[in-house]
Amino acid sequence: NAGVTQTPKFQVLKTGQSMTLQCAQDMNHNSMYWYRQDPGMGLRLIYYSASEGTTDKGEVPNGYNVSRLNKREFSLRLESAAPSQTSVYFCASSAGTSGGNTQYFGPGTRLTVL
Amino acid sequence: AQSVTQLGSHVSVSEGALVLLRCNYSSSVPPYLFWYVQYPNQGLQLLLKYTSAATLVKGINGFEAEFKKSETSFHLTKPSAHMSDAAEYFCAVSDDLGRGSYIPTFGRGTSLIVHP
Image (cartoon, rainbow over all chains, first blue to last red; front, side, top):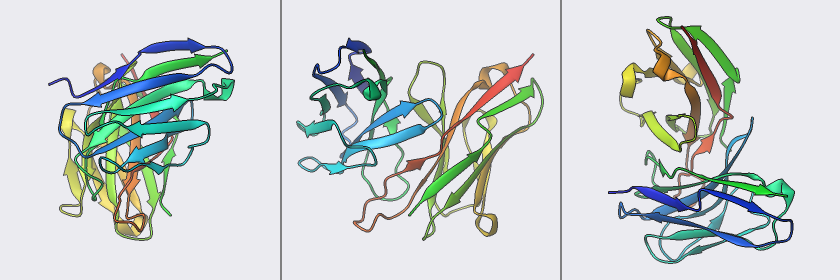
């Protein structure tokens, strides 16, 4: 039982390049999330998927797109990377979005955009 | 709209001393409240959560938190700090966004430093 896995762990991009961050969970969870973590800013929600087949914007969606590929996988795409997207990205999952659900986090992807 | 304020971006204590990390929230409805811990170079993991049962919630590693509605607070405490408690701590609140979805909002985090 691996929990939430993310690939890659580290990535360096040049401005304008594109990439996709992958996330998978093996807990049969319905809901999945993408956050970014910046120093002094805590975690900010980029997008979430309450259930398979649905996605919704979070607090900071600009410059990102997501795909809920199936129940297990939720990917985050940067179409044209910018230095402001340098951050640590965390994927999380939960059983659902009803109150009190615990989120389970992956180990993160450290992205640097030059 | 919900929000979380964590007082103090850094808290420094001596090993064996009391740990107190402060969290105040705003929410239009009774909230669900969480404390998560992040060890260096890792993802977040749940310490404890309040879901409208007992107001004093006990979590892992000897931590506990008390929900005080009148003060809109959910402060995290531990009687005696251990070196292994050094980490980043995040308070989070979730309430109904109006679509039946409860998505947590996280505070900015408090870094706990433990001195020998």
